[in-house]
Length: 390
Image 1 (cartoon, rainbow, N blue to C red):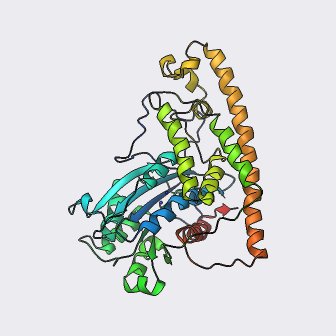
Image 2 (tube, rainbow, N blue to C red):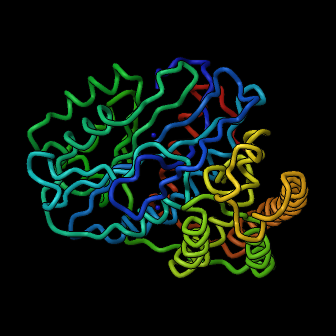
Image 3 (tube, rainbow, N blue to C red):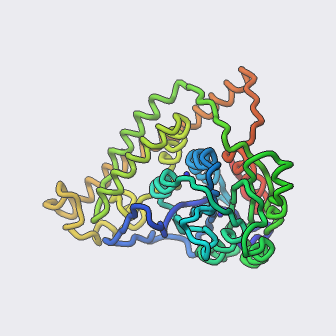
């Protein structure tokens, strides 16, 4: 499981997933809640992730599943003048023959969205298959198809990762670069292989788009899961957190089930992935499900609980009065806030413990991975916008 760039403009943080393509989707049809007291202009970070899904890219996709939570976590630590940006993430695959030659073998998996569970589900649904990888085409498609917010205080960025010649296809990378500069979108290229080979395959040229960067990763590298004294308690708190969600609408049950499914899928991938996901879920600014959860809906819009039809409520609430429902939601809101605070504190202690263990055991690993390189890029580029990342 990416902006008109002006020096001094505020850079802001990602949130994830609206236009899901053909993955089991969440069709929220009861209400669309908009924060009643939202600022007139809310800064945001928009990130588009473009992944090569050709035969050799299983390692890249596995890294992306974990990287999603690290990326959101890093962006979630960004502030500008005391404000925290919204985060939106989009996902594309390229290099799959079934996507069609006329489409450049490119497919939009998700438009910009903040539905992190759905995006994670879509990442876990990616598979590899041999094909032609047209980098210029997928960059161009993402620039044209996605709803890039042109507000001057938004950070707009593309991360494209792959391992074939960057110049393949019928759309020149230079054309895509020109469009990126016009839209104020930074394009960062990530080659799966050695840095020298990536240069031979012209990936450094793509790094010139919109003042982006070129880097390389070992797509098959695996991180060690370092045990900490906080792991078991964090998993227990995650169970408590899940118990505070109250689904509503036709898809509330489906979305609630997907939340648990993604917990298990990330844990099966690695303990680290599961714990990084829990850390994000503990951050109320990053993990928001107001389109299906009554607590988040009420937090986003103080009138939301009056708008939801009785028939859309869980069976246990349908015979209760509006005032009784509001009291139940208030109690669940307080319970969730307490659990999220504990998750935040323990996640910070866990990160500190891991850093110390690496120092004590001289665990210095300079192997570049999707996680390490994207985090470095975000932190470096954030400085251009006077953004502070903890």
